Structures are given as C-alpha cells and as structure tokens.
Length: 278
Image 1 (cartoon, rainbow, N blue to C red):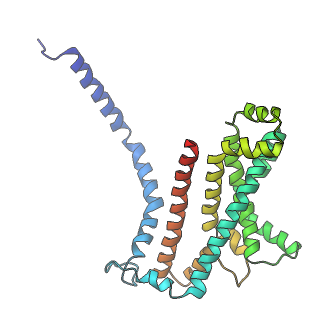
Image 2 (tube, rainbow, N blue to C red):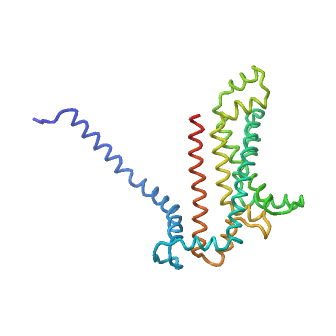
C-alpha cells in the first residue's frame, strides 16, 4: 500500500507537468536569446572597446579612459558637434512636445474619421530618406538657409508625430466628464486645457517629450540632408570619421551617445512614474 498523501502526490504531478511544459518551450527561447544577442552584443563590444588602452580594436590590453580624453582635446570639431546635437535635441523636444500635444487634443476633440489622425502620425512611419528629401525640397523652395535652425525644424516634424501618437493614446483614457464639468462651471477652453486636460495628460506628455529628445539625439539621415556643410551634429561627425575606418575615438563617441540615450530613457520611465503618482 502506498504511504504517500494524496495532496503530495497531486503536487508532484503538477510540478512534473510544469517542468514538461518548460521543457517543451526551449525551442522558443533559443531564437529569443539569439535575437537579443544579435541586437545587443555589438553594442556591448563597442562599449567595452571604447575603454581599451590599445589602438587595436581586436585585442584588449587593459582598461583606459585615454580615448575619451582624446575626444576632449579636439573641441573645435567633436565637442562642437556634441553641443549642436544637444541644442537640436532639446529644442526639437520642446517644440515637438507642445505642437504634438496640441495636435493630439485637436484631433481628439474635433475630428471623427481616421484620415487626419493618419496624416498627423505619418512622419513616424515614413522612411527617413523620403522625409529628409521632402524637407530639403521644402527648405530649398522657401530659400530657407540651411543650418542649426533647419535641423531643429526638421527634427521637430519627425518627433512631433511620435508625441502626437502617445498623447492620443492617453486621451482615449481621459474622462471627458471632467472637461465638461469645467466648462459648465464657467472655465474658458484655454483654462480647461491647462487646468484639467494637461494634468491628466502629464505622463504621456513627459514620455513623448523625452522620446522626442532621444530620437533626435541619434537621428542621422534627416540631419544630414537638412544641415549645412559648416554645421554638423554628433551622428554626422561619427559618420564622417567612420568612412576612414573605425577608430577607438569612434567607439568612445558612440558610447557617449549611447549613454545620453540610456539616460533619456531612464528619465522617461522615472518621470512617468512620478507623474502617475501625482
């Protein structure tokens, strides 16, 4: 006669079933981890080799920060392009956040079909090359001088679509009765927007703004087509250096750009959590 309790026997069977299920799913985890490795292993290699003391990219000779020091020894080129990148990203993020939020509110309130919505977020889906050529043609038609301002405007058009899409998704969850109550109490449309609508959209606005900043940081194609030869951003500068071969300084520049992007993403998550808790 068996001495095992019925409950214990059932528990053992459940564990075996779960183990069998996990065992059958191993073939799904292999392509997942292969894709993760394909995406992130090159980034890890570039980051690690930026701290390599040797100028040989294929041999490790010790930890060093000298390639970062080399970057700061040429401020007229590299640091100038880094400053331009930060200026463009910050300005484009502010403009894209304001215009994208207003566009989303207008679409949500005053349109019913999906055509206007599709047009508003189209720049996010168009190929970068097509958008860049279109913006360059527009600037040429208007005799607009290419430079830092043209890059800011171009990045604003590109990033504004992402802000609009994020705010539209948030607007679908906003309770319209609060706005109606505000108007019934005598508030003007502008006051209702600032006091009722915008606070409810806080997490989406913050996320959209920081996403716009992140996208602008490493945007190359649109900046390349809409800038002048005398004004370059960091991605353009990296591209011009890569044409003559990958050097340790390029690894260091790419790592700096990666660090700025990671900080922006972490800031997005942090500020979104803070806004949600308010």
